[in-house]
Amino acid sequence: MRPRYRLAAATVMLLAAGLACGGGSTPRSQPVAAVIVSTTTAPSPPPVAPLTGLPAEPPTLARPVLAVKIDNVADAHPQSGINQADVVYEELVENSSTRLMALFQSTDASPIGPVRSARPTDIMVYTPLNRPLFAWSGANGWVRPMITDSNIVDVGNTPAVDQYFRSRDKVAPHNLFIQGYLSMLAAHQADAGAPPALFSYRAAGAPLGAGAHPVGSVHLEFGHLGGNAPVDYVWDAATGGWLRSQAGVPHVDSAGIQVDPANVVIQFVDYQLDGGIPVGQLVGQGPVWVLTAGNLVEGTWSKPSPEAVTQYTDAAGAPIALTPGRTWVSLVPTDGATITG
Image (cartoon, rainbow, N blue to C red; front, side, top):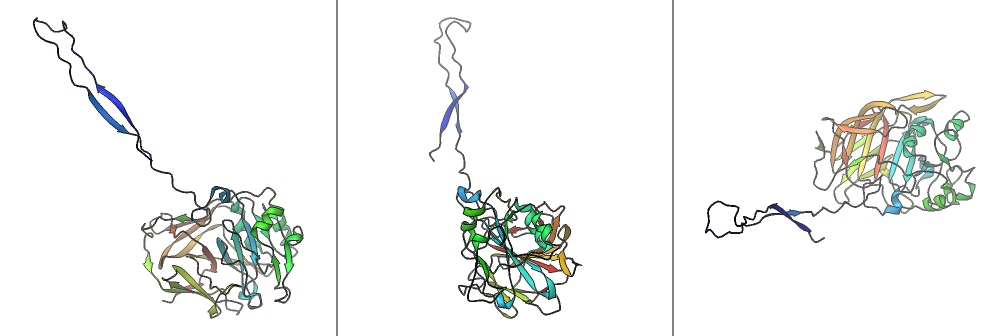
């Protein structure tokens, strides 16, 4: 953009003849003092996707979230869509196993799954997302009303049966998939809203946060009953991501690509049993580890109400800024993580 200027007459004074006392003097024009004022404005930063911090086109920004509950036991692997999700939450379920909730907003994925049942912890995860679409496959009898009465667009396999299919390469109940993100939006978007930003992101070269220090790998445990855990994340400088392994083997999707998010948020959570189901206590506060750019930043997570977006702050009380890109959030039990490298 070419700079524009305006001429400001700061002092203009002409001394006319006859205003001065005495005769015979020749009037002189005094010089005009001018100030050049620049009105150049810096270009606006490009819009970014709310769940990744990456550049996005305006039509994409207004799209709602599709939250999909994804099976995570060995019989469900490899899964589809997990590497296209903007954010993936991992939560404890029964028998020290985990289940995923994948959030899609900035990019399409097709198909997505396997889709499995909901849990009470899900409600605290998706409530801040401004009425997202929620894809799930049933729940315990006392949990189902909690899900259907929450602030979602219900696209479970009953109300949105047109979007679900059974895969032939897996056995039930690990073979239920949905067609894809954009397909679900086209058929069942209803009155879902665009989500808020869930994280803070930093510009290139910006500091990582108070207390950041290099870490090579972290080990996560979700209990002591076996299940599909444990999980390991290893920093890979070549890809700029955290390579994920599960139960000692690389965690790959249906295309054979290993999960390697730019960020891993390890949120230490107290789980309480309700009807035999672990329920994450996500309202309140607790410690958090954030893995980003080959470093670990220790801090605090806080969420004052179910509707509030969880805040992550460093030791100085400043927001922890993530690397723009995809993020996995591990809701681990309070003693569930150790640094291994």
